[in-house]
Amino acid sequence: MHINLGIIADELSRYPSRHLKTRRFPEEILNLRGVCLYKKGMAFAADLAYVISAADVTEKFVCPNDMTLIVAGAAPEELFRTARADVLIFEVPRRKEAFYELFNEISGVFIKYQELDARIRTAIIKNASLQEIVRMGEALFGNPIIIFDKNYCVLNEIDSSIQGIEWSVDKWSGAKMLPMDTVNIIKTSPEYVRSDASGDTYFVSNGYLNYNTILSSIRRESVFLTVAVMETHAPLTKSHQALARYFGNIVYLTLCKNNFNSGHSMRFETFLKELLYNSQIEQAIIDRYLLTMNWKNTDHYICVSFRTNRWDKISSVYNNICINIENQFPDSFAFYYDDHIVMVLNLDRAKLTKPQAVRALSGILMEGVFRVGISYVFFDFSTFASYYRQTLGALEMGEKYRPHEWCYDFQDYVLHYFMHYGASRIDGRHLCFPGVVQLYIYDEENGTELLQTLRVYLECGRNAALTAKTLYIHRNTLYQRLERIGTILGADLDDLYTRLFILMSYIFVELLALEPIR
Image 1 (spheres, rainbow, N blue to C red):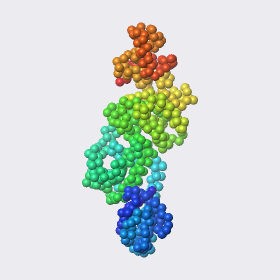
Image 2: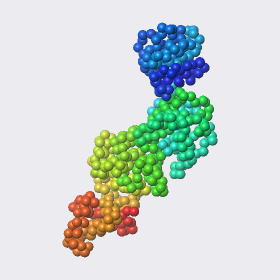
Image 3: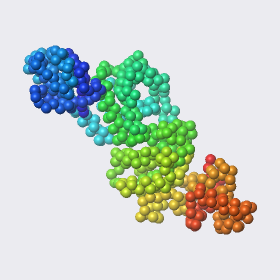
Image 4: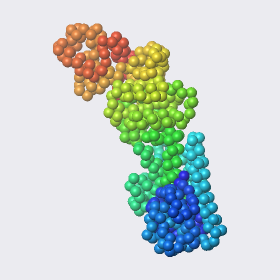
């Protein structure tokens, strides 16, 4: 961990100090990794602080440019005004013992923060929880910390010492969140307005919030979180703003390791898992969660379940796999669930057809030694659980009947699945041939009768004359309808099993009193 002169001055605050305004680095930048003694003519490193005695700073002294200098003892400021350097002057007695005592204390400051950084990073490697990392951060600041997601929902446990804040409650998850009025107060405060538009670190005074608060926002691609350090115990200083930025990056790493991010929020993952538990969730709430991903309920999706042969089922390994999947499919969401990695891909946002998406999966399959089950295309997230079960059915039937293959599309195995389980595990409407659903939608939108035409055509053994006679239409009209059906259906009617599958879909609808789609 690097620190800066502001942190050194705060740590050694019992010594009067002056931080000259000639520095190259802004106060919030942590640019120093160590300290050493100054010697004229030596090569200076940009990430080291050099300590010199004020007795050696004479009128002939020329401060080198592009360096960080700490002066032990009273020294005239005019000697440094023309230099392009970071300069911190500690007013200590001009004697050797005081000089080396100060040097050792400065070294101790570096050691303190390096040891703290090592402990935090070790905890991350060991998959420490967010709450454990927050406790280490609270020891760093001497004040409580709150982590917010992009909706200002609280991600960690709130310290009991934080009093007087009125919290709103997220209707579905029950998570505490800042009321919109408070968020607006923060965003209209002068400190926020002066802060960098990209989401920097800034200080909000207690004139706007209950406590003086440092807020540090971290934005990484679609990930957004805010670290809030509240002044309830120890005074907050400017140097704490730099530490807040550092700690924000630590929180980001922690959430990555615990599968909180990589392009998605933990709340959205929890929402999907609730759908898989078959919880009844209102459509308005589903729409709201989809909106956080810039998705719509009417977009077209596929669900893919990855089964891995890995024996070391460590959460961090699977989290990294999810990150890689999302990197390869930016309009997807991947998470670990019930010994599988589950991916939802928004085909509309990705501008992919299902066959194109399946071809793109081949790279992941070869690299990760996975087997995958793929669902039908769907567009209503309230039915997500059924399409997830399709992926499991595809994996089960594929591994049973074609174990030498790696990629199993439920559409290719739905007859096998139905012979084993009927409609006991998956709603009958989700066992229907996907093209039949598309024909139904087309008929509803255009007032046509393609769905009935296809059924009669198949029941008549694909005899065009008999079909036209049965439907009381001209044969040319039938051929026009069949051409349109072929375009929408996307299936080979010469295949016996495809024809059987389509006819069974009609039977599902009748026997189970279903409608193809609503």
